[in-house]
Image (cartoon, rainbow, N blue to C red; front, side):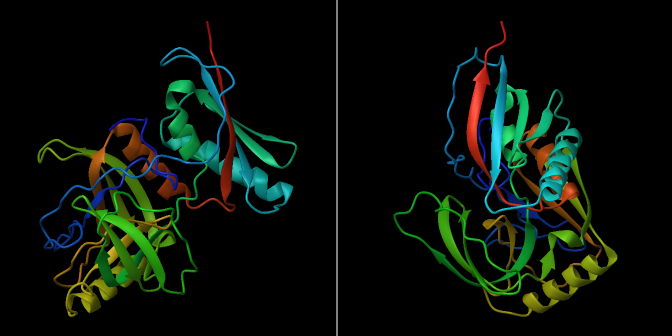
Length: 287
């Protein structure tokens, strides 16, 4: 899986999650130390138009974002700053981010990285929610569009587990993305699992994580699972057998180096202060 795969909501991959502390989590219905891989998510479906097609791997792309609700000029400038920070932390060179007419943001960069440029403008809201119910869907090949909701209320969300689409009913957010102090992309050469993202929780976040996993471990399946939700999409719903202490977690799966760096950069910079949608994509060929 390469740069050409992009989740509409941040990352171009649906991945499994394994928790790396005293006991390890895995995806969906597995035990706490048997991780499994997930399936790529849907490609971005925001409307876009290409004015000039460039050579494969060459040229530049201009991706224009529009806020989905009215925002102040200061908020738009702050959003542009976060996008620049994401590009830098993700190791994406040659990217230019500009605010135009105080109502749109244009991100310019290599045309070969168009999907990555689009992902820079995604919300990147990470949350851990307890699973209330999990229903496999028959005859459904892919998740529908994500539905986001307030962190203090239950949420119905979709995810993919062992090539099966599952509808999850989730409780309110137990641990928020703001409880993560640092995210770092790393490569697992010893176990052969490829690229992954290490998460370090804050002191308060680690305590919350240990508390909720302890509570869930005493429940019957599937209430002994918690969902890792990224912008309304369930990346994984690992089962836990006891409280997970140590304040660390690991997100792994079919990542390329660029995708792992991108996710780490988005978690580190936090969610954007405004929801953006892609209004146009213009590709320019460089001879």
